[in-house]
Image 1 (cartoon, helix red, strand yellow):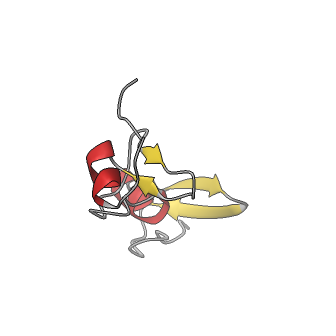
Image 2 (tube, rainbow, N blue to C red; image 1 turned 30 degrees about the horizontal axis):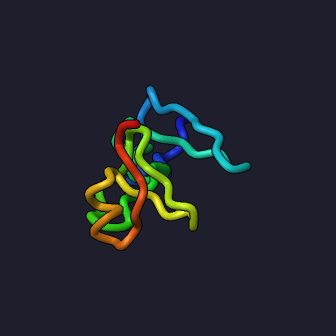
Image 3 (cartoon, rainbow, N blue to C red; image 1 turned 60 degrees about the vertical axis):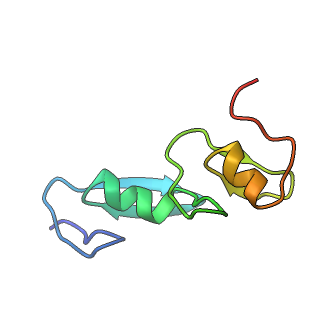
Length: 79
């Protein structure tokens, strides 16, 4: 029997398991995996599915615009 999705609780016969930070999660879709595991931008709260930007204090941002709006200077999307 399949395990329920760690995000939505759906039981799906094609569910998959992801191990992250010492824990195992079961998901029925990539969307549910992203909701549970992807970091959110500190400013706009969008889930960061790409590289994103990390401030020196550990905060994540989706882009340098959002980092700047949060008062973080010096981060750039491209070098």
